[in-house]
Length: 119
Image (tube, rainbow, N blue to C red; front, side, top):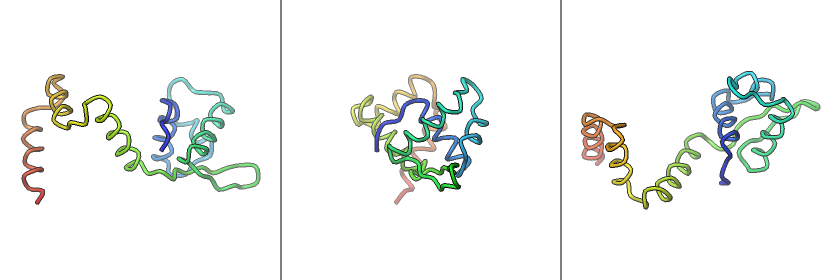
Protein backbone atom coordinates (compact mmCIF):
# COMPACT_ATOMS: atom_id res chain seq x y z
CA UNK A 1 0.00 0.00 0.00
CA UNK A 2 1.64 3.23 -1.16
CA UNK A 3 1.69 6.31 1.04
CA UNK A 4 -0.93 8.95 0.23
CA UNK A 5 -0.47 12.69 0.13
CA UNK A 6 -2.68 14.77 2.43
CA UNK A 7 -4.93 15.73 -0.51
CA UNK A 8 -5.18 12.11 -1.69
CA UNK A 9 -6.14 11.04 1.82
CA UNK A 10 -8.79 13.79 1.94
CA UNK A 11 -10.22 12.52 -1.35
CA UNK A 12 -10.21 8.93 -0.09
CA UNK A 13 -12.24 9.98 2.97
CA UNK A 14 -14.79 11.50 0.62
CA UNK A 15 -14.90 8.37 -1.54
CA UNK A 16 -15.28 6.15 1.54
CA UNK A 17 -18.16 8.35 2.64
CA UNK A 18 -19.88 8.46 -0.78
CA UNK A 19 -18.95 4.86 -1.73
CA UNK A 20 -19.27 5.71 -5.47
CA UNK A 21 -18.84 9.13 -7.03
CA UNK A 22 -18.14 11.09 -10.16
CA UNK A 23 -15.41 13.76 -9.98
CA UNK A 24 -18.10 16.47 -9.70
CA UNK A 25 -19.58 14.68 -6.64
CA UNK A 26 -16.18 14.60 -4.93
CA UNK A 27 -15.62 18.26 -5.78
CA UNK A 28 -18.96 19.18 -4.20
CA UNK A 29 -17.84 17.57 -0.91
CA UNK A 30 -14.62 19.59 -0.61
CA UNK A 31 -15.24 22.55 1.68
CA UNK A 32 -11.88 24.36 1.73
CA UNK A 33 -9.14 24.78 -0.85
CA UNK A 34 -11.26 23.41 -3.69
CA UNK A 35 -8.98 22.24 -6.48
CA UNK A 36 -9.83 22.84 -10.13
CA UNK A 37 -11.92 20.03 -11.64
CA UNK A 38 -9.00 18.83 -13.81
CA UNK A 39 -6.64 18.83 -10.81
CA UNK A 40 -9.10 16.74 -8.81
CA UNK A 41 -9.50 14.36 -11.73
CA UNK A 42 -5.72 13.91 -11.81
CA UNK A 43 -5.61 13.23 -8.05
CA UNK A 44 -8.29 10.56 -8.41
CA UNK A 45 -6.42 8.97 -11.33
CA UNK A 46 -3.29 8.94 -9.14
CA UNK A 47 -5.32 7.11 -6.49
CA UNK A 48 -6.27 4.62 -9.19
CA UNK A 49 -2.60 4.19 -10.17
CA UNK A 50 -1.71 3.59 -6.51
CA UNK A 51 -4.39 0.87 -6.27
CA UNK A 52 -6.81 2.67 -3.97
CA UNK A 53 -9.59 3.44 -6.45
CA UNK A 54 -11.21 1.84 -9.45
CA UNK A 55 -14.01 2.98 -11.72
CA UNK A 56 -16.87 2.00 -13.91
CA UNK A 57 -16.86 3.81 -17.26
CA UNK A 58 -19.94 5.37 -18.80
CA UNK A 59 -18.61 6.60 -22.13
CA UNK A 60 -16.01 9.23 -21.27
CA UNK A 61 -17.31 9.61 -17.71
CA UNK A 62 -15.96 7.53 -14.83
CA UNK A 63 -17.80 6.53 -11.68
CA UNK A 64 -15.09 6.03 -9.05
CA UNK A 65 -15.17 3.81 -5.98
CA UNK A 66 -12.61 2.80 -3.33
CA UNK A 67 -11.07 -0.65 -3.57
CA UNK A 68 -9.08 -0.25 -0.34
CA UNK A 69 -11.35 -0.18 2.68
CA UNK A 70 -11.12 2.54 5.29
CA UNK A 71 -10.38 -0.17 7.88
CA UNK A 72 -7.45 -1.59 5.90
CA UNK A 73 -6.03 1.88 5.36
CA UNK A 74 -6.48 2.75 9.04
CA UNK A 75 -4.61 -0.40 10.11
CA UNK A 76 -1.71 0.37 7.77
CA UNK A 77 -1.63 4.04 8.76
CA UNK A 78 -1.77 3.32 12.49
CA UNK A 79 0.81 0.54 12.32
CA UNK A 80 3.19 2.80 10.38
CA UNK A 81 2.65 5.72 12.78
CA UNK A 82 3.19 3.51 15.83
CA UNK A 83 6.32 2.03 14.28
CA UNK A 84 7.77 5.38 13.15
CA UNK A 85 6.84 7.61 16.09
CA UNK A 86 6.42 5.31 19.09
CA UNK A 87 9.10 2.63 18.59
CA UNK A 88 6.41 0.00 17.99
CA UNK A 89 5.18 0.47 21.57
CA UNK A 90 1.48 0.78 22.25
CA UNK A 91 2.40 1.77 25.80
CA UNK A 92 4.21 4.78 24.34
CA UNK A 93 1.11 5.63 22.30
CA UNK A 94 -1.16 5.61 25.34
CA UNK A 95 1.43 7.50 27.41
CA UNK A 96 1.66 10.15 24.69
CA UNK A 97 -2.10 10.73 24.70
CA UNK A 98 -2.21 10.75 28.50
CA UNK A 99 0.58 13.36 28.68
CA UNK A 100 -1.16 15.46 26.02
CA UNK A 101 -4.38 15.15 28.06
CA UNK A 102 -6.19 13.63 25.09
CA UNK A 103 -7.38 10.62 27.06
CA UNK A 104 -9.09 10.60 30.44
CA UNK A 105 -8.64 8.23 33.37
CA UNK A 106 -12.14 6.91 32.71
CA UNK A 107 -11.19 6.12 29.11
CA UNK A 108 -8.01 4.39 30.28
CA UNK A 109 -10.09 2.29 32.68
CA UNK A 110 -12.40 1.38 29.79
CA UNK A 111 -9.39 0.30 27.73
CA UNK A 112 -8.08 -1.84 30.59
CA UNK A 113 -11.52 -3.40 30.98
CA UNK A 114 -11.69 -4.18 27.25
CA UNK A 115 -8.26 -5.81 27.41
CA UNK A 116 -9.12 -7.84 30.52
CA UNK A 117 -12.44 -9.04 29.08
CA UNK A 118 -11.07 -9.86 25.62
CA UNK A 119 -10.56 -13.55 26.40
